[in-house]
Amino acid sequence: MSAPVCSCAEQLSKLTQQVSVMRREIKNIRQQIDGSMRAHKKQMSSLQSTLTDCISHASQFQSKSPSKCLSEVNQLEQGRICTVPIGYVNSCFAVKNGTPRQPTICSSSRASLKIESSVFNNPDHSLVGLEQYSHIWIIFLFHKNGQLSYKAKVKPPRLNGQKVGVYSTRSPHRPNALGLTLAKLEKITGDTLHLSGVDIITGTPVLDIKPYISDYDSPTTRTDYTSKTSSFTDLQMAEDMELDEETDAILETSYKHFKELSQETSISCPASASGFSQSRSECRGVNDVLAEVKDYLEHSHVFCEQTAEDKNTDAPECSLAGPTPISLSRLSFGHELHSTIAAWVRAPPISNLDVRFTVNAEKDLKEFVPCNSTDSQRPKFQFLKGPDEAIAAIHAILSADPRSVYRRAHCQDRLFFFTLDTADITCWFGDGFAEVVRVKAVQGLGPTELASL
Image 1 (tube, rainbow, N blue to C red):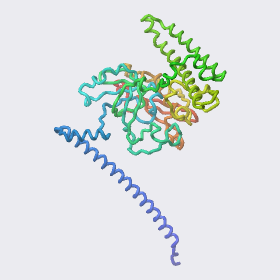
Image 2 (tube, rainbow, N blue to C red):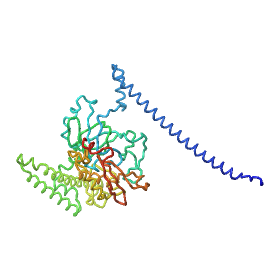
Image 3 (tube, helix red, strand yellow):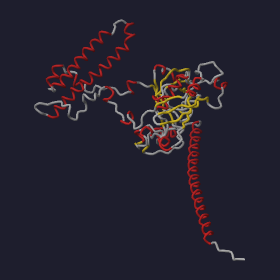
Image 4 (cartoon, rainbow, N blue to C red):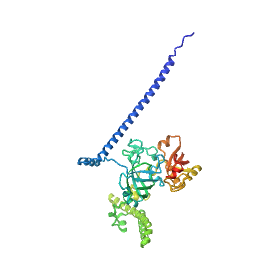
């Protein structure tokens, strides 16, 4: 018999493979240890916060000494407060996936907010007078962030991967995870507010609500230069500024036309009480537009006069070719004089998508009945008023492309799932479009459960 051949090379190869496997296992163990340490730190921080809250709540039942009151005042002055939700939102959006990023994207979305009885003994008393307003501000907590980490720069989905500062965006990942949204107040029943045009999900803790007042919350044209223009007449403006013939003719013609329209508008408004109540809103709208035109014309004259004084020449001119803030090619008056936004908000690098439905999806959607229906055999919406409103909501959500930047750029799976009210929506994204392929009732909610909503 022949002697066995020494296979040192094979043994060395096997040992090398085992060493590489051991290295990978050691690396995985290290990663697991690091993850466990981070989770342990978070749990300890959460436990410490819970203990602090328990101590603070226990101290409320004890008599408060002057030193304790002084300590609370100091904490308030330092901005360290313990927030208490005044209520929790019940929305047509159950999860973050598919929820609009801004309130105006989906005006047909609906939600309700019930004021907690633990905040007020009579919660409905806190809402007295709020029915006089059409919209309200809602200050809430981003409770589904998943973590409390945040970065100085973020990537808004509308910028398609470009980075900007977190404070120039409405990213939910912020040092203080607070959100602000504007919602339309449909009605108030007892201690519950019924809202529409929302972009928040069910279970969102609400910290405060405030009425929206357009006179204060919406930037409008301020007459800081009224004292300079109130003494101007048509003759004085022509003599003081010496505009070139073309600009002077445009401004004077526009100003005279404004005065004629202004007089016609004032005559057309009826003087009777009944007539005035019927057409007051129409006259007010026309007067607002005319006021903005006058505002622009007067502001143009004032700017030309200030430019002439700064140049201090014998024949000052208001040149339209120079670097003037107002030009006839870009009229800036009214709101635009005092309100500016980033250019990418109105002109993002990504465009809106076309939204379409398959025949089966339309058929499935028509099976749903409105929220006030008594039909117990068909699926029923909890918030929406029918299939037409659901179609409008789906179209608004998908046209804005609710996918994240990463999923939009790197994921090959183009299927997308989201929940709207009591309907599970399945769609897919193509080049420049989104198509809804299936609509079905939320799993676990049969006709009987949906009818009881």
